[in-house]
Length: 288
Image 1 (cartoon, rainbow, N blue to C red):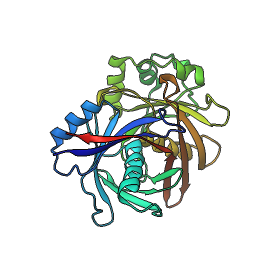
Image 2 (tube, rainbow, N blue to C red):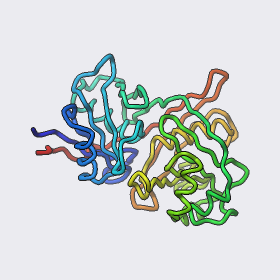
Image 3 (spheres, rainbow, N blue to C red):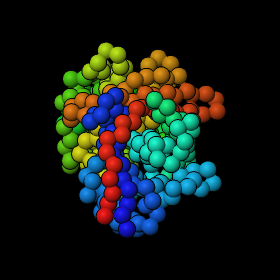
């Protein structure tokens, strides 16, 4: 049985930038092991599998895999998959679509910039800088100790590590032994280091993502961690306010420049988080 697939670049201002994603339609007949093998064949950070060409109770069922295993939620697969569903299965006038992933239902607003509303954030314990700095081969002085190192989740937890400047961000190199020690303590294999100094003046922040235990040595753009960061920025008033509207860079150090748009608002009812970006169609084909 042949299966149609699409390759898209997500959080990309142009083609051949951002984070690559393979999306398979009509994938409901595949086993989890087959999905994992296909993901490794493509070799991208993630591959998504749309289980039905029709929405079920208002949402399209989707599974997401990294080379290291299945994940309950991921950001760039959510936006990229929504773009493919819109392009292939829905009318051009459609303004929104919902994906049902393992973590829950994620609504996506369609347009030139696609926006996903992530799940309400949860905030874990703060972590010791003496664990975080060695994991990134940095000195403790490279960390911005005015703000906490903390695990945050909006569907997939990430360890958020604030750095002093762009120089420190560029010097990050994963020490795998220290990384695994930190990941075990924090309960997440996703390290998201960020700083308030972007590469380009039009933007607000820069970040890098390391997820070696998921088979991703460095991710070009990470929508799930960016949502965690948006919630963190609002929670700790990192940008001076509990309302966030920011432009985040990622992927510059590995030649895949990406731009992620962050929105968050903290109120007495909780924190809402939206992450947006552009999706570029690159290729289509069939698995035989």
